[in-house]
Image 1 (cartoon, rainbow, N blue to C red):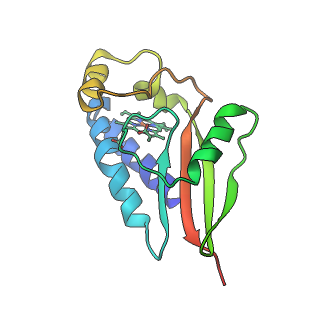
Image 2: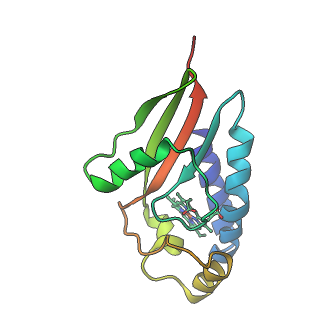
Length: 145
Ligand code: HEC
């Protein structure tokens, strides 16, 4: 929850300055927020089957869950995964909302498109529609004794 709230707040503040500025908020703040919240042996992040930033790394165990969501559009329930070394994983689908279309939709404003192409020459994260699977949030944490 705090990860989602902080990301939404960063996006909201960024968008208040204009969508081109908000691109920098997504680029710079998302990794910082994830790092700040990764405490006490816990780590978290987000990933996608269609990445914008190819450097967005996630643990191996997240991939099969993401693949399941991609394969079945009716499967959107969050999951708990039992991991080795008394750890647990949590994965939650991220669905595209109207506010996301500015930077992930079919048609982008020219200034946004050129800034994104400049920063992310391998961008695969456009062409989404509202309600589409955009990716997942994941968390890895120690199981309680
Ligand atoms: C102002 C433009 C903008 C808006 C609006 C926006 N994004 Fe993004 N999004 C980006 C950028 C830029 C990145 C790459 C960030 C990075 O460098 O890690 C990104 C990355 C992501 C990622 C990480 C995986 C990847 O592809 O690198 C997810 C998931 C994501 N966005 C989902 C969303 C969702 C859901 C919304 C709406 C709530 C949204 N975005 C709105 C610009 C935007």
